[in-house]
Image (cartoon, rainbow, N blue to C red; front, side, top):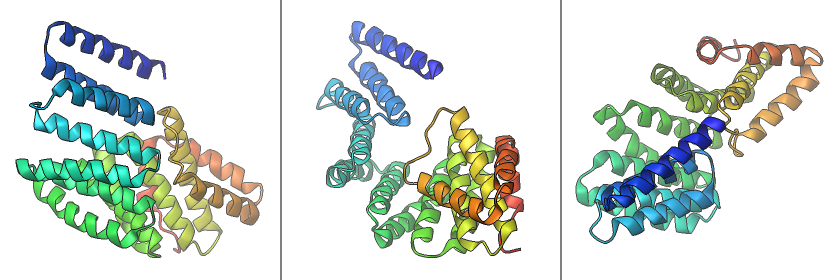
Length: 278
């Protein structure tokens, strides 16, 4: 946490410096970085504050790419407050700019963000349609990180549609890519998604043990990164722990400890090697 606070201080100092030099474009970009930083930390108020400041500094003739990103972060802030209509309206403005600029990567990213909002509202068919439009673009452009992240969301959608085996397959594909990219925070979320699919498919104690180790590894990694587990995913961990305690008794604590002891890369290897129902 101290490292994050120090990073914020340096960003704010950089912003003050570029403002002092009269560099409006530089100040707008630095303010946007602060919006990104606070979005990563899960602070809706500061994400909105710095995104609005970035827009104001950019002015009506600002860099369209910066303006588009500021719109996206205003959407993120609204979505964190569960104001989905406002979030969607900001994304529609971002999508319009991306298409006007012919920026296919930004277009696909905006479609994915729309899918996030649809998923959070339980609009699974809409989320699936949006992801099916975005994923081929990522693949064509070689945008591996974006492809892996959108695939994680696709897996969650498939879970919601009652297809845990498909969700497990998709999570495995995205986890392998995220490990190669060193994206630890995203790996933690992927381990939880894979755990939930494995729990749904579980047919015996070995399957519960597999899922429980994944949950423990994900929780340890999230704690190391000082990044809370998303509120949408925590209930899956809670449900698994309750089921494991009932089915496995005292052995559940030992299994949890085993999973928590796994370094994150080994946790991914364990997840990819294991399969429930086997």
